[in-house]
Each structure stands twice: as C-alpha cells, then as structure tokens.
Length: 124
Image (tube, rainbow, N blue to C red; front, side, top):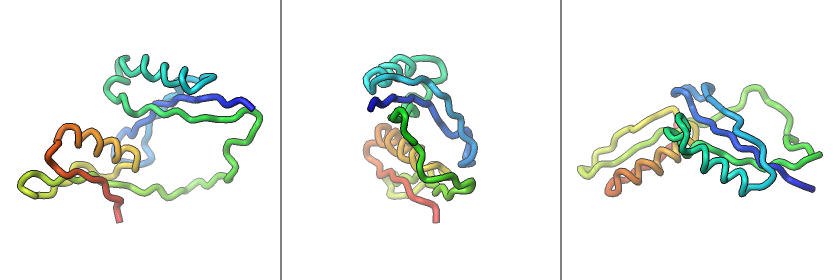
C-alpha cells in the first residue's frame, strides 16, 4: 500500500480558536518531496513571515483515514505564553492560542531571550 504526503500551511488569524487560515500546498509521492516543497515556499512572500506553520500529513490510498466519526463541537484547549524576566517578574506574552501555536511562540521567544524562562500553560 502506498502513502501520499499532503502539505498544508495553517495559522491562527486572531485570538479566536475558530478563526484559522489553512492553505493546501500540495500532494506529494514522498516525504522528501513534501519537505523540498516546504523549503522552496518558505522563501516566498507571506510564507516567509510564518515559515514554521507548514505541516506534512501522510495518508494511505484506498483506506479510511478518518475513522472516529464527526463531532461538530470539540473542546480545543487554549494556551497562554508566559515569560519571567531577569528581575524575576512574570509577564503574559499572549493568550488564547492553540497548543501548536503556543509551543511555536515559546520556541521562537527562547531563541530571542536566552536568559529568560518562557513557557506555555493551558487555560483553566
């Protein structure tokens, strides 16, 4: 059985979890070709502003890829990103993010602020 690889570029438009922009980039015969497409597109206008928001998903031909049914309202936990500065003061960086966006922001901020503690926390 042969798998295909689908590339999407997806990001949150604002703080509302339901407001997301997703672009189907393409369908590829191998993971390597999908990764090459991402490397090409990361340099293009728009994408270069959000280069880490690409995803690759593998699907199998002639097989159900979604087997769990469909629920119209699904709980999506929201996260906030926090940082502790050198004076040990804690600051809210951004709230209302889905987990993937929160973790990306943490990663990016850790690169910028090497001497500060930065973390994501699920909203209660």
